[in-house]
Length: 278
Image (cartoon, rainbow, N blue to C red; front, side, top):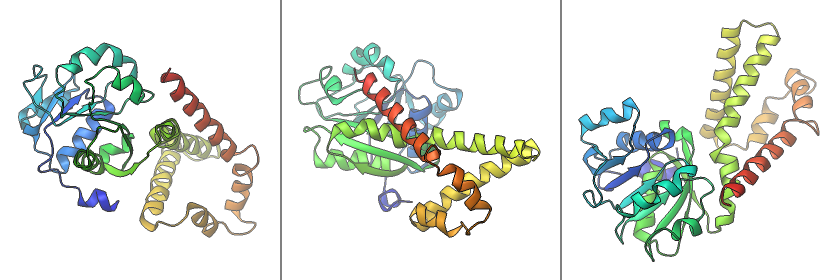
């Protein structure tokens, strides 16, 4: 757990208007509420929220308020990037000059966001990832020149409540951030899939192979987080010369092995993020 994550306090944060409560928006919302953001200081604009999200109305969360009826200090835009042009006109009615627009839309640039909203609108781009649902996310933030220091602190507190945070001052890096941490959980999930499949091929029962793969991936990640040790050193620590791990790593670390595949995968994701930006 990061230092800023552990010190984040949301009791006085908001009001927050969440525009889109799908996988990412819902994950962030659950993290905020768990860390003390008062439900009555949250509003959601979503025409068809999931049942678990809709049930939050019983806790005081406001749903689909009319423009100007809920004065948000932070408007978090979490719809699919392809929907941006469709929802942009609706967003305008919910924005005041002092409202910080926080966009988690992959591939939607600051220039695109700034062409739609009020001149001088404070805007933040944020790239989070889905482990935010359990408070283990990674969020990278980039601000335009209209975001005040206090607004940066409030936005960071919201993101720190759901995991680690980092800032960049060069927006061009956001495509690479998207490719590494934004899309990265899917790579790890696929690793677990492949490890289980390999275990089954090696003769293990499917349920046992699945259990071993899940816990191995989860435990190794937890060890990296808990120790802070360089992953390369952790790898060396469990690799005996001429042992079983060394035999496996000779395949994974070959010139055409996992390292090369991940370089190609991250490059493909980065290029797609650039394409989305148009």
